[in-house]
Length: 110
Length: 115
Image (cartoon, rainbow over all chains, first blue to last red):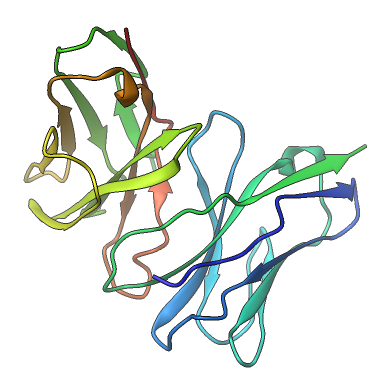
C-alpha cells in the first residue's frame, strides 16, 4: 500500500469547516483513498472513500486532486464531537488490509 | 442493524497464559479483520478472514492466530502471552467486495492487559 503523510495536529473552531489534508504521492491506479476517524478509546469509524472523483456523504466531503497525489477531507460544520484522530489510508481491494499511519489529531474548539 | 460486537470488552491475563477473543460481524458481512492497537505502534493489521479462509496476514508471530466460523463469527487466539501483547484488539467487518472492501465497520475492541 502507498504511504500517506498527514499533519500531526490541527485545530478548528466549532461551526467552521475543517479541512484535513493528506499527501499520497505514490498512490497507484487501483488504490482507493479512505478516511477513518477514531474518537478516544473507541474503534475507528469509517467516514468516506473515493477513487478518482470527489465524493460527498452525510458526514463529509472528499476532494481528490486530478493527479490523485493528494486529497482533502472536509467536515463542513465541525462540532465538538468531531474531535478525534483522522486517518487517511490508501489501499486496493486486493490488498485486503488497512494500513493506519499516525493520523491527524483534530481538535474542535468552542 | 446491529453493529460489530466483541467479547469480552476487558481482559486481564498473566504472562504465559493464552487468550481467545471473539468477534461477531454485522449481519451479512463475510469479511472479518483483526487489528492490534498500542500506544507505541498504533493500529496494526493482524489478519483477515473471508468465508472461513484466512486471506491476508500481517507481520505478527505465530502466537497470534485466528479462525472464522460458517456464520462469519471470528475468534483470535494469542498463546504464551507476553507483556507487549497488552493492547486494544479491534475487529472489523465488511461486505468483502473489492471496491467497498475498505469500508470497514469496527467493533469497540477488547482491552487486553497482560501482567
